[in-house]
Image (tube, rainbow, N blue to C red; front, top):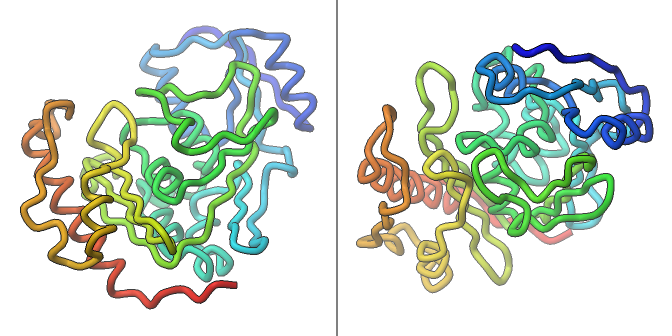
Length: 272
């Protein structure tokens, strides 16, 4: 790791002031993505600003048809939350298959989404559910938030402080875990709303993305046979040690079908 200075913020205002003062600073929450990045010398921030004591960035609640989750909420808290389970069970189940217990008890939703690791799980939920990413400056629609590998629409002095998830009629997540890391080789989140179906894929590209052809097919016929014969264009998919582009394309097709099967096995949620 490069030399860096550590600061612990006691409030959101203090953290933002330090981010503005130190242009190369990075916020630190769980550190599950950032610390390995530093160890591999892929980043060299001048300061690490510990935001873990900012209580305003915690909490889980439902307001109307929106599930609100604070950015510092840990994966284990999401997985165990009766509020999340009642509102969006698929989100709780996604949180419960992130990496391993050690990571789930340290890592945070905000850190995962802010770093936008291409194999992270939460981005698929944020995108498929059409969530709003609430920052210290604005609200960013999920479709506008994710840019590229480890890149988002966030400005350098902007912090993710929470998420607003529209509650779907039902949703499901299906994932092939990388055996060593627990990351998604491919993960597919499918969400059904009154007037739309959204399908988001993680682990199989430079960043999370929507599979629009699958959405169109499922919108026309929400059934287990709707995706029969539908092929994922593998031209833009990565070819690496975890599998070829063609293999990843096949995995996307397979895990989308599995997510749809899981979704159809659930009762429709009654509107609040």
